[in-house]
Structure formats: structure tokens, C-alpha cells
Image (cartoon, rainbow, N blue to C red):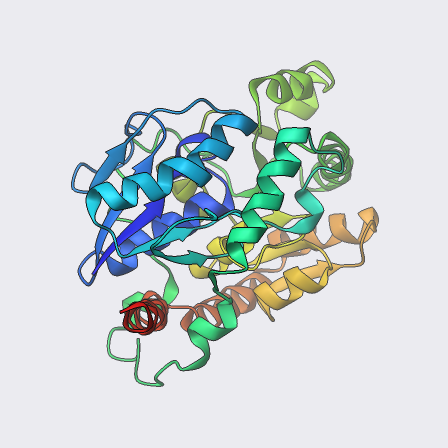
Length: 354
């Protein structure tokens, strides 16, 4: 079976939930399905050479994405003779002859309130295509999980190692640290910085906060608005590759998440998969993703959030308990279970099309 995988986000949003979901599909099915990754630009330097790609350069714009989804993907699929097209965004080609799959990887709260004309047109056309596509729910993929899957090799239960990722990791913070990935919401980031100022005042040099900035401008903005003493408690990163992101995650005390969690590919699920607990504000989608492997506080309660961060540093038993729960949670989302569920869905759809 040959599947064309949409790699738009892997190029233009390499740290997004959609991009990591693409990497999960690549890693899980490379030995079972002939996967061809469609890329709108040159192969990223951090992507392993053994990943088969089809390159067709397209600009990063709403119009460029519209053409990519509606025209380019079906054309590439015909050219490489792919039976299926798998997209990880809320768009699908209207007139593709191949079977279509769609994994929802965006949280609605992260979408902009006002879209451009091209973006609205892209979404309208996309949902028209999605209405004819297989909508892949996470629960459906894991519903028929065999209890024996993952039980034979304990090392597979605490996360996925992406062999399709290459590249240098770079320097990591020396002291214990929390990790936060910004999605470009400056108001949210200000809340975190206010919380961390309270936390750092009590912890001193016992822990630091690593922030993956959404843009270089955001990086500079934090520097310009922070005192020299406060900056010493921060570790700011920008232009991070997925390889470096995974290394930062594995070394963290916990992941801080203040946003909603998408059904697929969110950063909280990445953390749980690595045995790293989550701390942040309560939300239904985040509660569903992390289960008991998190220290969540009411939305907007900065004082309690600061107390939660301090607790994970000074109370070792609390941290270890959350880490154990994260590993248990990871068992229910192991690569073998994901592989079996997605492969089953692929095969069923291919038979129906035939």
C-alpha cells in the first residue's frame, strides 16, 4: 500500500502538533506501508535521508496552501501512484480520486478569530473535501488495542524515539528546568512570566524556566522587558529543530501548558509519552490528554500555579509519583497500538475503494 503524507506543516510549522503527528505516522508505519512525504520546500536538514519525499516548492501563504491542498496533493498522488492521501490539517482536496484521511491536529482556541478571504475559502473547500474523507478520531485508533501490545518490551512504553530525526541537540540547561513552548500568544506568555517571577523568587537557583519562543521578535521582547536578575532564571530558545525540542522535553522536570490540547499531536501528549508530567491550567481537552499525570490548577489562578511549580521542585515524592503516572498513561498510547489501529483503518478503506 502506498500513502501520500501531507508534509506542509513539517516544513512551515516543524514544532506544531501537526508536524509531530506526521513524524508519528512516519515512525510507526515505515515498515508496513510505503509512505511518501509530500514537501512544499527542500528537505529539512533534520529529516533522515531514508524518508522518501516528493518535493514541489510552494510559498508559505494562504493562496499557496490552497493550491497545495486542492491541486498539488491529488496531482502528486497520481504521479507517485498513491492509493491514499493523509492530511493532518482541516483541509482536504475536493476532487481527489484517492481515499482521503484527516487527523484533527488543531485546538479551536488557537485558531485566529478573523481569517483572510483566501483562508476562509481554503477552509470551506477543505471541509467540503473532509466531508468525503475518513475523519480519524484518536479514540477510534486506540479502541481495539490488544492488551498484549507493548507488554513484551517495557522500554517501548515510555515514549517514541523518532529515528527519522537527525541533527545536533545543542546545549541544554544545566540546572533542573521547566519547559514551555510558546504559540505566539503574548498575553499567555506574560501570564507565565508573572507566575515564574513569583516562583523564581522562592526557588532561587534551584530551577530555571526554558521557553521555546515562537519567533525571534518574541525572544527579543522577553529580553527587553525583563530585568537582568530575572533573565538569569530563564533559558530562551528560538529556531529550535524537532530533534532539539525532544531533547529539551526529555530533560525537563515538567512541561508547562496553559493552552488547550488538540486531539492529535499536542505538546502535552508528547510530554506524557516521554514520562514527563504536565503542569498548567485546567481545561477539558488537557484533562483528557494527561489523565492523572499532571498538576493542573484552575484557569487563571497564578498563585496556585506558582505553588504547583515550587512543589514539583521541592517535593521529590510528588514529582516521582507524577512521572510514574505519565509512564502508565503512555502505555495506552504506545506506538504499537497506534500502528495497529491506523494500519487497520488504512486497509479497510483501501478495500472499500477497491
